[in-house]
Length: 131
Image 1: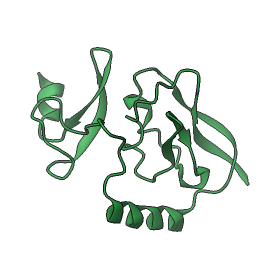
Image 2: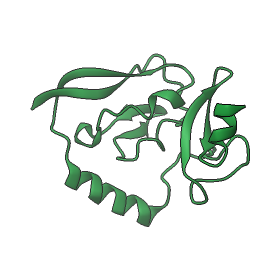
Image 3: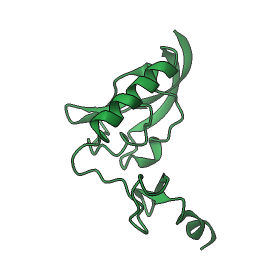
């Protein structure tokens, strides 16, 4: 094991909303007993796309000893997830807050707006940037 950056989830702050599950494209984060958990550290790339979606601030990045990132395991996970569907918890919607586009229609980016975690699509992003 090497020292590398990996997601840390504060279980005391986690409310189990599941908003961090989808941005973790590698599949490292799952809901377990109503709380987000890094189930497979070798799938966590430490990029932190999940951080901005957490409404309680339970997620952070820490540098610590962890199994090496496993590209092959990520590929296997993505193939299995495609077969099963999105894998999102019930009630979690992933769509653009402006136009309602879903991720099969437009690329979506997690963001914070007015203290809330939300999503914007690449079509609506310029309007947010330029007003």
